[in-house]
Length: 292
Image (cartoon, rainbow, N blue to C red):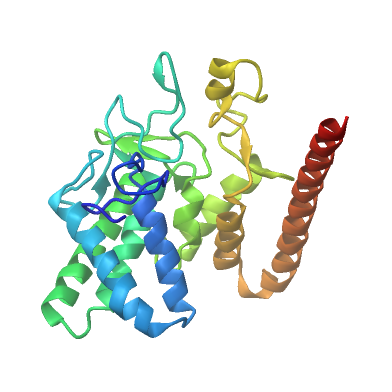
């Protein structure tokens, strides 16, 4: 299904009928492949299939491909257009994208940096390729910190567009704090985590926008437009909890790591227990309704 560096965000029976509407699907795949390889699983699969696929993704992005994807001179990965939201925060209403993220979304840069850094490590048998990826990694990392790091609040912008950082407090920054391969220092990771703890963490996952923001919507409900307006403007999503946990464990001082890990494990267990209980209750209610 890999096509010009892109993978579908919605798979159907074949390439022609699948939806290639997300610029990050291939980057999430690359992250999964990197983690699979880092854990030591199936070296033959990594070398014969996964690594060539990751190289083809990076090469396509450098050439420029669909969804407005193109690597800028500073090494950062541009994505989307004003009328085209291509990250996971893709809700739209009759007024267009609810959460404009065209330009340089922070999690896209974090995933892109990690991929380039990994390819630099894996190209040792090809000195020219290794040098090229290392230069791109260093250029990208330097540009990332310069563009996204907000020294006044000691955290990351959610995106940069036309050179201007968007200070909206969203959980996307956690991807950069969590990555094994990241341009952030430990102190910078700590700043991101501090902001997330202050406004984004809930018993059910991470808020998509800090409640201090004037655009924050605290209740997800109503008609389709109402729900879409709230979808990424405060609604809590569980899936980013993993990046929060990883970010905390990479940022916390060594002496506090065991205590922090125990608290995080309890938070995750409570979150999963509540979610599974909810799903079981919903399934039981559906079964009773069917029997009635």
